[in-house]
Image 1 (tube, rainbow over the protein chains, first blue to last red):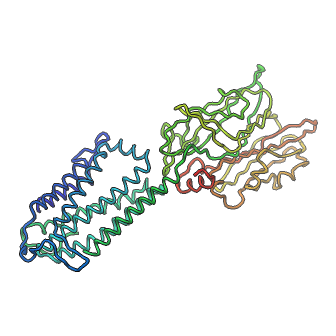
Image 2 (cartoon, each protein chain N blue to C red; image 1 turned 90 degrees about the vertical axis):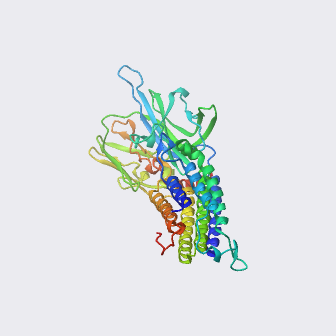
Image 3 (tube, chains in turn cyan, yellow; image 1 turned 180 degrees about the horizontal axis):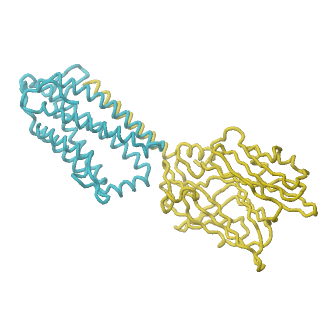
Length: 216
Length: 301
């Protein structure tokens, strides 16, 4: 696995799974540090792009597909993903004191809703930029099948994430989500699927020729 | 890729709009102060004198469930009923989760968060030392004193406090109870011959619109002049009429009709017949939208 995707994968794992110790986000990393890890992985993809076999075939950084649809190089998306990861890290800083932060949000319901909405927007944008950048990378590497595969998966992920976010916001506003274990499990499953999608990018970033899609 | 970009932009717009809509909704349902669930309650105490000649101590307990906004951190420290004739220091309060129904599961303060409201139950106790029958004393509002020094007057519905002497050997309480469909009944055994003079209470006419109240299968008015013999029973039933509106679902009803009768010796007495047990939904609100509907119906939000 390219070290960049490796870091992104582990960063996303730590964002999702961590142990709270004494009311503070602790092991293995607090969420904000995990987002910084994701960002460093993305930066690595920008600074040290994975080797491509058919680079000569795609020398232009910007390919005009149609007059209205411009395909940017992977770095275009990765740069945006890096910025989004940084914003996510900043937003996640107060969550280090998770017990205090939860209490604060409970006392300020508007802030709780805003926090939820902002988190959903950042998650959506990060996933879009990251996977679109990866798809562009796959195209440059000469893997059009895997590119199509990831774009389809991204489409489904976007639909599911947007639907889940809207349900979550509505449920929170209508007081029906506070004790919904089912919603929590669904969101966790969605996040795990996204992490596995990132994990599946391993063959794409190897120097070896990649085979058929093996991602989830 | 083009489809994904459209989906992404649509998703951003939809999430932003739904967040804004949710924020607007929560802003619109904010409570400016505590809202006590209305109570239509008749509380009757038994007035008696100790063998030493002193008035016996009576404690009237009034569970008062209320809602506050989660952002409202004020703590009610004292409650005064301005309409009550007793000294203010005879009224004391404490917080009781679920009006004693779920206190073993409750937190020390008994606060429950439902959506953006905190639900709590304030237990008000009034210590009485009355030697003579009194009342009914009508309470419609309460003055709240907060720990931060603020003061506020709130509406509480209509609470009637009465003190009656209970004649011994005239009635025997056999049974009473209620069901989940808000139907209630009580049974008394008549122990002496008597003539019914009237059956009434301050809230009787108001609650007759909500409940079908029958005594021995007849309306209370028809019982006037009835002769009851020893061994007869007085069977009172109250069945709600039709589906309750949202405001009625969150209102406390406690009706205690008083039967006034004349004995064969010509003496006149009164007997409390039944207590329609309070609507338990008030003490266990669960649905945030129901509370919003209730508060909107009351014109609070």
